[in-house]
Image (cartoon, rainbow, N blue to C red; front, side, top):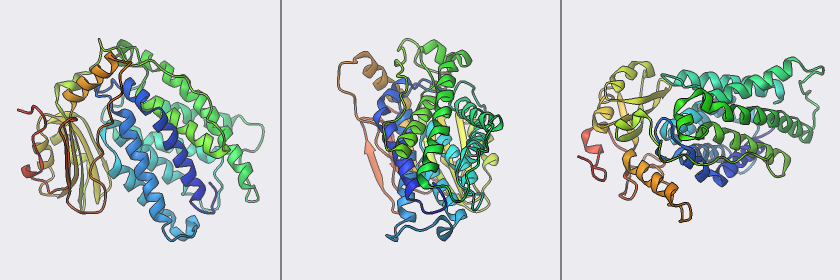
Length: 383
């Protein structure tokens, strides 16, 4: 986690992923907001997998390279882009923005070791990124959790009687212990924030659950702590799944969760918000001038991709039938003794080659394509 190589950073990400994988279905079963489609755990796992794969690519020379040898800007842009393109659903896109914000801060200070001060700043920047990516931020969700975790660390730093900064001679083991201690305090604050979520968001309160994304964030940070200590993660509370009697948010009036990337030049995310909101809700458009990731709940994915016909190329198209997802989720929660169904299939991977996969059991189509009506195939039961 210092300015040596990416090996320790990769280990931290792998720890987060492993811990999230271990509670993936539990996170899925909590998912009620904005739609009870039961895929928050799946979506966040995919985002972390994309980041891990990109870190492996950056180190593909076989020899560990220093952060400065790779290039700080390249690290930020590569990791952020991988998270963005690997993201699916509201939770995946928001997580990609948390990763981007944290990465920007962590590599912005050459020569400074990662310590409590920098972790607090990284989480604060991550929260800012995530909040600005959402058109109508809802409190009680992952947004609140990350903000309150950042606030806890920064408050502790401000009131610490000792200098929280680590000097250049700090041993890696001492640094890892310091980071783990800082993150553990953040996880405690995060758990408290997660438990308060139902007080802030009616959809959670009515379903008798905490926010799936916020809970998943505490799981991931616990995984990072485990990797840093080489030990078991700190104990986290388990949460009961949602009541089926209150499964849905109003966004379920739209049928298809539609995700895709757009590549071009001179792209501006705000420009596309209004046209997409005419077609649906849960609109997220994030990225930079050359790459955007789009998420929208709509009844007409074709028209959503057509918004970008004149400005760039659409790829990584991923359309999921949310009615089918909600039905499968309800069936799973009704029969807790039965085997869990497999997670929804992943979207088309990187590499630039056109590919198509159809999963009729999940109502998902994933395809790399240009923005045209030919990209969209009928999902199960579509009109």
